[in-house]
Amino acid sequence: MMMVLNSLTALVTPLMYHAIKAVYPNASPLTTAILTAAGIANTICAIALFRWKRWGWFGFAVTSLIVLIVNVSIGVDFVHCLLGIVGVVVLYCLLELGGNNSAWNRLR
Image (cartoon, rainbow, N blue to C red):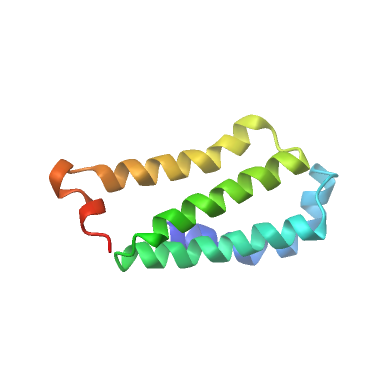
């Protein structure tokens, strides 16, 4: 799901610049480029997680933080800003499932 949604975000965001600008007047081409790059980076991080790479989670967390900052700067309401961070928390919890047999122990 992460790969599909982030790939779609990377593809659709540049095409929706005018719609984004209409809703969030503080949005600029730079913010759109950052959000597009974050979608690409998150897709790469999702692939890394499927290949058991620990850096995939950290990359996902960093890009989600960057998206949070961009969203706050363009005026996205606080609740919607936090939804991106919820994804990081859910992913962390999923990786923690299993106690001693958690996925964290398998990530390289």
